[in-house]
Structures are given as C-alpha cells and as structure tokens.
Length: 279
Ligand code: SIN
Image (cartoon, rainbow, N blue to C red; front, side):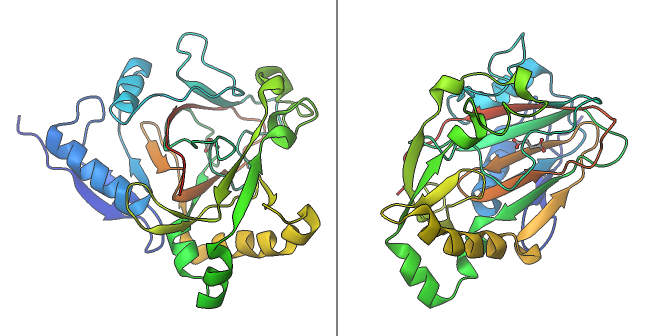
C-alpha cells in the first residue's frame, strides 16, 4: 500500500499544529522532515491514532537526541526512560497542573517532551499549551528592551524538594530525588537554538526572580509576564483521545495539565529529550 504524505494542520491561529498521515512507529525520512519543520516552526505538534509501544516511544525519542531522565518523576518500572504522569482515581493532585515548561531549572534545559496517552478519563484531562514566540512578539518595544538584558533564576526546590509542593501532596509517594534539587540562570528572552527566533523564557512554576533583583521586586513584572503569556490568543487546548501523542519544545512553549477529572484515572507516558544551554 502506498504511504501517505505527512501534512500539517493548524489547531488554532496562535498555537500548535497537528501532523497528519504519519506513523510515529515507522516514520519515513520525508515524514521526519515534515515533523522537524513543524516542531521548529510551531513549538508544539500533535498526532492522532498512533499505536506506539513503550519501545517505539523510546526509539522515536532517540531520533531527536539523548533522553534526559527526570530526577524527580515517578519512573515506569520497566522503562526508566519513561516518566509516568499518573493520577489515580483516589488522588486529588495531578502532575503538571499549572503553567510551566519542563526542566527550566537545569543548566541545559530539556529540548522537548513527548507525551503519549495511556489511560484517559472519560472526559477532561486536556492539556493547555502557550506559544512563547507569540508571547514575546506581543510585548511592547519598550518592555522588550527592558527584558533584553535580564536573566532569571529557575529553581525546583519549592516543587520537588522535601518541603516542596509534591512532597506535601497526595502525589508524595511517587516522587523521589528531593536532595537533587537545584537552580539555574537563563536569559529572560532567549534566541531559540533551532529557529533563531526570540522567545520569552520565564514560567510560573520554576522562575523565582530576576538575577540581581529581590523576589519582591521581581514579583509584579513576572506576574505581568505570566498573565500576558497565558492570553487566550497565544494558547491552545489539546483534547486527548486513545492514540494521541503531543510533542512540545520546552524552549518555545508552556503547558498546563487540566485537573478536572477527579474520581477517574489518567496515565500518560512522558519522555524528555536533552537540550543545550540557552543564549
Ligand atoms: C507534564 O506537565 O509534563 C504533563 C502534562 C500532561 O499530563 O498533560
């Protein structure tokens, strides 16, 4: 049977595209070119009707770089490369339930994450995404100039540390690595290593303050940026179905796992791919 040609369909004008006509378990060279271009140009790409086994998920991730095993997340017992984003029906707290980007607290933040739906609630459990190129481009020239020379500190102690958010929640037993918390400093506006475009690089979960500023001084400007970047015109909402896969660029987007399905289980497999220091 003849292979389909991969095509791209916009999800919303502001954020994300769907790549149609590819089998991620066996993509052709031309599919990979289309996927690479969509990833570079749109920051978050979605696929439907996939049948990826865990081994195929790992193999697809390895085509993009080295797998960056999360120090804190519950790992899948059989496949250490796969982090489990799990909420059981008895649990109230979900993982990733606020705007963030993965691993911004690392000196070389993760390039991307590939999330595969394994068990879904009947409805709900969608993921929101926001485009940080658009967020940057939507700022005034004056604010762009102010942000240009700034750096920000990103930390994970308040999220994954001993007294962090997960350790004091009903997700506590799954999380590990409390002693491995740390921080990193990155420019507030980065030049994206793949696209060369400028993107806003702060996020509400991990950015604590601007370098050289106090937390109190940083708070109102950071909050302004968070509210601006989450504007509806820069965001999209992905409704998961069996066979859905999302692949996002952590330097160009934020994401937010909606926690609206209490009493039902949701299990996702996430693989995170290593990145480079940001300029
Ligand atoms: C995450 O924050 O990586 C998980 C997103 C999701 O479960 O939708």
